Each structure stands twice: as C-alpha cells, then as structure tokens.
Length: 612
Image (cartoon, rainbow, N blue to C red; front, top):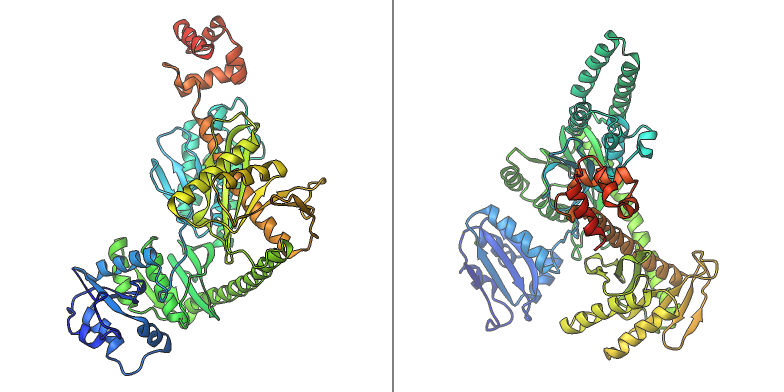
C-alpha cells in the first residue's frame, strides 16, 4: 500500500501532520522535492516512529536539515516484514540513485572459479556472470587477480586443464602447459580418466579449504608408491605435498575466522573508501576497495552501514563480518542475512584483540586507497583541462566517446565505443557492435556502420551525444565520421582522429582535427594527450575483448559438427587424422572413409557438405 503527498500539498511540507497519518508497520519511505525527484530513500521497522524522527526532533544534523528544506512530499510503502522493507529499499536506491543516499557503485558481478561437470576431463576456469552452466562454482573472489592467482596454483599443484574445450578437442600433441609441468595432457591421453579424477578431487578439496585431507591422502599414496618401488611417482607426490604445505603456510591467517570479511571505512573530504579483506577457511583471498558515492556531510558509520546492507544483499555473507564502525541496526541486519544465507551471520565492531588487528590492517589499506584515488582524480582534472587547451575547445568537454575496430584478417569484426566524463570511464554506457555485411578488412565501412548505429539510436532515443568524438584511425576514418554526422544533421560534435605516428610509438601520435584536416603532434608529456591515450587504449582493449569472444564463438561451432552423423569425437578424429581443417577439406571420399569411425556413406555426406 502506498500513502503520500502530491503536488496539491502546500509548501512548506507539514511533516508533523503527515506523520500522524502513518501506520506503525514496517515499510519504506521516499522523500521527494517539488519536481517529484526522490531526495532520499529509507527503511523502517516502524514507519511512524522513523519518519517522525525527521519532523518531531528539535535539532537535526545540518545535512538532514538542509534536505528537509527541499522536501515537498513523502511517499511510503508498507511492507509485510522488515526483511521486505530492506530489500525494497535496496532496489529503490539502485534504481533511483537519490542524492542524499550512500550509493554503492558496484555493477559488476564478482569473479568465480568454474569446474565443468559431466566430462571425463573437466576444465577449471575463470568465470563471471550467471551460474547457468552445469558444474561447480567456487567463490566469489574479491578480484580477478585473486582468481588468476588461485588458478595458477591449481595448475602448479594438481595440473588440471584450463584450456578452452575447442582447443582441448583438437590437440594432437601436448601443449606448452604440459611441457612446463602445469597440465597432465588429458587431450592426448597422457593421463587416465581415473588419475585425472583424483587430481580434480584434490583441487576441489583444496578450494574448499580441506588442505589437511588432501595432504593426508597424498601422503598415503606416496607411502603406497614407495612400498611398490614406484620411486619416481613417490618423489612427485612428495614434492606436491611440500608445495601444498608451503602455500598453506604462506596464505593461512590464524587470527582470521574460518569465514570472515573485514571492512573498514575512511572518508577524506567528499571521497569515501570502504576496504575489505576476505578470509575463507582461514585462508586470505586478498582485498578490494570500493568508493561509494556519499552525500555531503556523511560520516563513516553511516557510509559503512549503507555499504553493508547494499553489498550483502547482492553477495553471500560469511559467518562473521568485522567492521571498524558500529553498523546501524547491525543485529537486525545480521538476522536478515542469516535468514538469507541459512546459517548464522554476525556483524561485529572489533575493538580489541586479534580481530581489532585485522580491522586496523583494513583501515590502513582504506587510507592508502583513498590517498591514491584522490591523487588520481587530481590527475584526471589536470588532463581534462589539458585536453581543452590542446584542442583549443574553449571549455573542457563533458562527454568524450571513442570508437575502435578490431578483427583478425577481416574475421569476426567488432567495433567498440567507450565513454568518458569528468569522473573517468562510464562503463555502464560502453557498447560493442558486431560488424556484418562488409568485405573482410573494410575498416572504413566498419567504422561507418558502427557510428551510424550508435548515432541513429542516440537520435531516436534522445540520449546524450558526445562533445568530443575520438576515432582510432587516420584521415579515412575521420572522413567517415564527418560524413555520417552530416548525413544525420548532427552539429556540435568535435571529431578528432588519433593516428599512430610514423614510428608507431606511444607519445608520438598525430591528432587530425575535424573537417579542417589540421594535424597536431603534441609533446609526449602533454596532459591532454595523456587523456586521449587513456581513452584510446580503453577503446582498443574493449574492442579486442569483444573480437576475441566473437571469434571464439565462431570457432566453437564447427562446420563439421553441423553434418548429420558427425559429433565431437568424429570431428576430433577427422582433424587429428588429416592434421587440421585444410587436410579434411582436401581429402576425397576414399581418404575420409579410412578414418576410424567414418563409414563410406558418412564420408560421402561429409565430402558433399564441404564441397557444395
């Protein structure tokens, strides 16, 4: 049920009268200004008591008093439970982004380790996104670095494969990973399914924190190998045990709880940082810093309370969360998270002992991170103004977009568009465009297609257009951009081409300025050039990532497997027998029929399919 004021409510808003109409039930309240814009969203176990605290108290914090001066109406939504109120508040804060709320700017899903299932030789790999594939997931981990370090350990200790399935199916000899002792080469049968299964089981136990079980099983296997005089295998197992113990000694933190997160908040000026240290099964997974958006005058306790609620409603909570400031309604929030997790969750303000030592480490990391971020923002402001001076724009642009094209010999062409504003990259507005219908390698046509799609949609939807459009390329690409803008009758967009100099070294780029064709060669230490390089490099990175994904998808769908009767095994047998795709295409029906598992009728179908 919703109750609220509307445009008919006179100004100033009569908060005291409004409070008397409220129920004493749990719910969510929204404070709105005269234009209907949401200023603040809050939750309450008792709506009358909580909303009344704003309008019935004699003295309020200056920030709260300033907000109330702008309030023209209040809308409330009654919920059945306090838990529903917490969930609804989180959704509204994310969708409305109210000015006076603390907002966790963290849209990315967290990385996981994925172990595929239903195979003789499962693959262990980095994963981000929905858990839609069959298999096991480990994590989430605080950063991609933590995942890659863990996967590196899995290669060293247990030699579980991490290669793509398409690469695995088409190997005819061991790859470099086997040669350096990081893979047991199941692709070419150098390890039996049974032995590989044992390695996968030990890797799984290790990731679950059961290293003692792994060491005990390896020790028994080593003794068994010694008793049967398999000394080489015994030595291999001995070295593996030693490596596990060495890694365990380096990573284990005896003061950490079995599952614990340690959070510390620091605020300097209008910049807030929350740093987290993560421990699972007593092993450190590393740390991560967040920089939530805070309203003016917010303190560390308020910021940390909002962070804990927003973060743990999106991510699994451990059994213990240690914080450097008391969390508002921490016991209530812990109870809600316990219900969600199905196990007890505690939120504790650590003030003494070993727990306090861990919190102190997190605080030092937060202080360092906030100092680095402040310096980075100062550098970004300098670069932004330097860009205006370099291009003689008069005023610094408010929005810059950069386009780049990526392909391999014309295959799987992808265009990228990245967006920067005065705060840096706006990743939620990045876009990729799969290019089609062009001759392979037609970079001009690809640029024209990507730009047309972006700006046509921008015009149709009334979205923001850039003040400055950067094109990774020379005169041809710039000409395509100018022609496209002219066709769509778009004015006020400066176009600059970023061309590599004759030596193609960073710092020697040439800038091609719009229709006039004026060429600038800035000094290598020019801050405006540094910003252009940063944006261009980001567009290049984003384009390459999209191209690689598209190319891999194309290669994963084999033309051979589209032929009735040819599955994964027969495809692998054909490629192995003929040494690759070219050999299969050149083979006749008689040669195809000599491959084990390929009868003559199937060979005839294969030949017909490949030769039209």
